[in-house]
Amino acid sequence: MNVADTQKVLVADDDAINREVLGELLKPEYTVLLAKNGAQTLERAARHLPDLILLDVMMPDMDGYEVLRRLRADPQTAHIAVIFISGLDRPEDEANGLKMGASDYIVKPFNATVVMARVALHLQVVRQRRMLERLANVDGLTELANRRRFDELYEHEWQRARRGSQPLSLALLDIDAFKQYNDRYGHPAGDRALRAVSRLAAAGMRRPADLAARYGGEELVLLMPETGALEAQGVVAGICTAIAQLMIPHEASNVAPILTVSVGGATLEPGSREQSAELFEAADTHLYRAKQAGRNCSIWRESAGA
Ligand SMILES: Nc1nc2c(ncn2[C@@H]2O[C@H](COP(=O)(O)OP(=O)(O)OP(=O)(O)O)[C@@H](O)[C@H]2O)c(=O)[nH]1
Image (cartoon, rainbow, N blue to C red; front, side, top):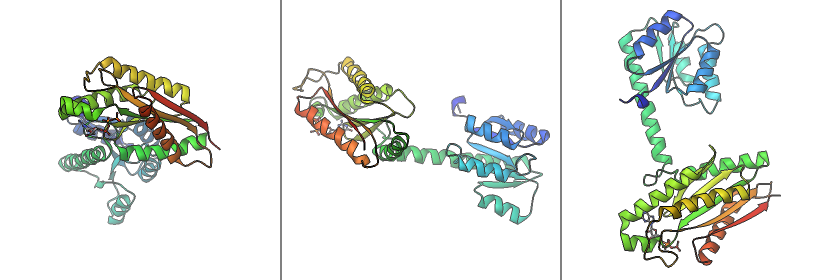
């Protein structure tokens, strides 16, 4: 396994010897982080986002149950797998830990082989969950977010823009005469061109909350929260220029001898009256107009919300 793929395990125990024993045990296979109390566990969990936490139940500043509750309350750390390690060996303690959302419960004194086997098992579950999440959210051809993921994030960003009275910009980018491209150069070449355009769209997104997604077929959607119309148009212009600079030959196009795109965009500061569909529909209308206007161009609309 390559170092970048190594999974991270955080060992949280107030007892230095326990920390060391568990740390040494895990080190040959995983990247190990250590925490000596509850506060440090929360801080390291948020900073390093480990795949798994081995969490001592009895710690002086904050017990493991409280640490788990706080981890679950923060969306960033809510999904981190937790195995309780505890000196409390009554069945009700174990049941309580599992009910709280721990993946497993190991009673001290622990057996090293059993700890390693359980850690391996839960890390495998973590890997499988990530793979499923990826399959559910990422488009296989372009590696962009898929439409399902876009729909989810769009609603989230719409609400965030409304609460924060911030502009939200959205652009639909559609490859021109792509049917002719496929007909002329073949479907595999069409796939390559679509991947190249997608890569540039993703590279053009500047901020962490910006999103390039494949909306369907040869249509991409670019979502730019907290971005006004002028700035968003600048971002889109940069992407269109980068696509033109690829100079992908398209001899069957009536628009240009190279592959081009049309863009419809809109910016809105959501008020209480608008629905999220309105911004999308405005961008779609503008994409239609850009196609009508001869393609290889971008049309934008800006409007204030109520
Ligand atoms: N190679 C490839 N082609 C695709 C993919 N998805 C959609 N297409 C093709 O994209 C083409 C879209 O055709 P149209 O909707 O007529 O659009 P167009 O030819 O680009 O015309 P305009 O958008 O009006 O300029 C169809 O031929 C689809 O088969 C894909 O994943 N790979």
